[in-house]
Image 1 (cartoon, rainbow, N blue to C red):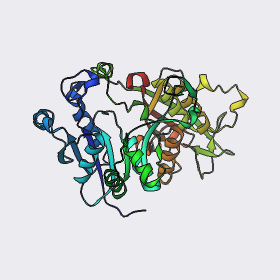
Image 2 (image 1 turned 30 degrees about the horizontal axis):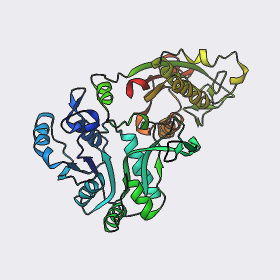
Image 3 (image 1 turned 180 degrees about the vertical axis):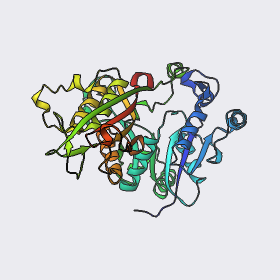
Length: 394
């Protein structure tokens, strides 16, 4: 692994937006009342993963951006604004040259992709640290055909081997800089930075993210129409569950086995925390409750791990085009003390839902020896979960 340094980003926004039918740069168009470029820069800044940004604009757009930043607020991470080149490739190189010399990782991102998320950024950076490159991508849904010069299909690649590549594309700074300079010296051009990296250094790691499906590039008129004035409204669900403490059972909470003389009584492993969470998730999506999906009259679920039930509930939620975005769990018990296990609980839930750990909260509290929890008769849990409907997020 290379030495630590800055994580920097080149934002390329020197295009004109001709395909979208605009007379000026499309990144100055508004979505939900804010310009595309400001939305993009705010998302990069809000991620907390980027140390500096170099913005690449057409020189003709400098004054317009200056006025825009006064109205909408300047991005505090911008180190420099530089003019673009005759091609996207040359624009990227102009931006790379202006990054700080102590940059370790360089991200290259399209200014017209305003829906970039923290999860996407974290994942590409993680892949750079492990593999040397990280390029966000999505599976190809349509069947792809290879055609000849007359327009006849000559072959059909296996769809499972195909990916649609997006930005950000992230690399070790010195390597992507070397690839760009080498390309200029040898008259080599490519449609994206990953292709240059491939030609110079070899394989590029394609990065996955739950958020990649919404990381859309605004290109055509309908992209802007569908993006205007359509807020993504989060849906919130709540869950509550109680289980009795009894001897002869393991105590399982959020998939973690807790050393204790008693465990929770139930048809499954009686993980009261995950049962409350599952109900919260289903409630956010108006899909019933855990008893409806996994009835205790069904022997298939006897003794089953509630992690399995949570994953299955999440799978059905995704089938219905919802996506869980965060969760909060409060476990109420007098004994045992749960503080040493909270981090493991958060990791278990995050892994089961394919979410960053930062999106999962688990807390524990006592009742000062009041009520059935305080008397040691049982444990209860409350949970909230937020979800979005995927078609609203596109």
